[in-house]
Length: 420
Ligand SMILES: [Zn+2]
Image (tube, rainbow, N blue to C red):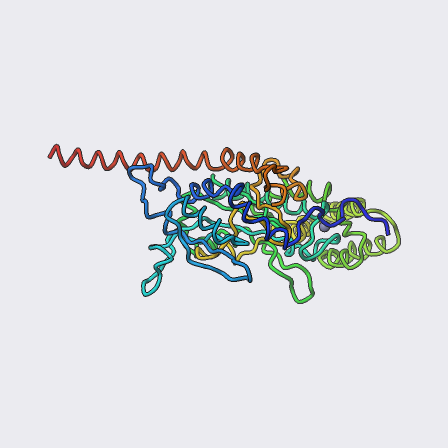
């Protein structure tokens, strides 16, 4: 069988043993522990008069140690302490949890409660297995990765425009997915109920019904958020990337799912006959379907509620973002830290720019072995710069403004007391 260049599995991954041996050097020389710690301190890192020095030290870190041992409830008083712990314990993975009401390491016999945490999203390619024809499970390739790109574009705009969030950090998960850290103060303070509501807002594909057809939480006419996603991202992606890459209208069990969604028996049977007897490609078959729907809608005197929006529904069922809601729902959920090394691929969980995510190629992400040694082949410089310039800087400005306004308030209050 001829191998399609785009569907070969990701190459250049590093085996687990090599990754393990490389971590010491990675934490000592390349891991940007200081940058990470500064982000998570949100201005409370001792430089501001009104900063709360206890704040960063109440953040939970979980280290996964060799043998899948989870060292939870760790906290660090400074970036220096964090860096030292990494060098000494050499975790295979670092997870970030919430900020608690007290130091998580001193949790025994006290009421430990999470008080704030970034709103996080996790999108994993395995949740797309029933709409991928190229790979399954942990594998990804150039033909399915664009599904992640479409998800990033839809969610990034939705979180900014519908919820007004500004500080979004997108990160490649190191293997087959992406994470988003919404770090606005307002997002960090959301209750678990509000987190669930935001996550549900983006949950359109809700499993399958009894006939195996996708169950969709959407109505026609489309909600403005869904309409925007369709018009600005999904429609184009469907025709230009998804259909040519995944060819779902040329593969029987895949097009059967699509046909089963069509409420008009005549259109369904016409298409079924054509799919079975002609050799047209998926794009041509879709365009034929579009034409049949348009004709039918024009023909009917009354509104054809069943058929209206059917094209959109099929597109949403396949390529609308599929988020793992459970990860977003609870303040107390752990999520892998940016810049970790994925133990099974050796790839670094690097930040991504949603504006250029179309050209992001997981195969070009640095592996840990390229970053270590006396003369490393690569550095994390461009990713550190993206983290700082694309994310931390604006957040810092806001942290400064918030803490400075607190200083002014306190000064004004003191002045009043003195005047009195
Ligand atoms: Zn693939």
